[in-house]
Image: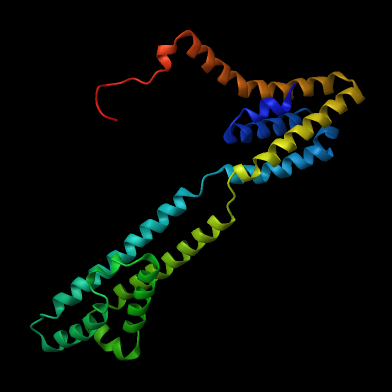
Length: 247
């Protein structure tokens, strides 16, 4: 079995599947020595890192960050519009409180959300801090904004936590291409070790294990062979269909 040639032909995802199948095959063989060998343990360790790398960055995490970004902006806009409306209140005391609060909210304008991401966070933080000062407490209370301001503050804090975590995860995430060579080498070394063990032990159990591992390689290449055969038998089927419309 030409391990290097067969493994090199598969993509990153297929290589991830191959390593998992080899490990599973060995573990199910019942041969303890095979599952405890130096190269098998090394294969498991490299595979663990490779499987983590092959996973895409957490889409759900990105979705949550975007959702909190929108929520944060919505809280600000609702507060802004409400307070601006109260500046026209027929009640003088409400109008006075609204004008003082609105002066803080309008420091960067209603369209502050169009700022760059980093600038926007700093500006929201400054607005929240200003409205939470003791001298603003009476005006915020007069306008019944205490709960809404707390929600805005919590959304800002939550967004910052999520954004920082996403950044940290992106820094530690490694692309599978950076580990591919190491993964290929680990597979190659284990199969070579397995072949040596089969020759040394010369039992049906070891020979069956080697045959099953070899089959794992065949399973990955058979689909590629079928695609090539189908294309050779029906070249037109492989050509992209055209509709006369621009693509």
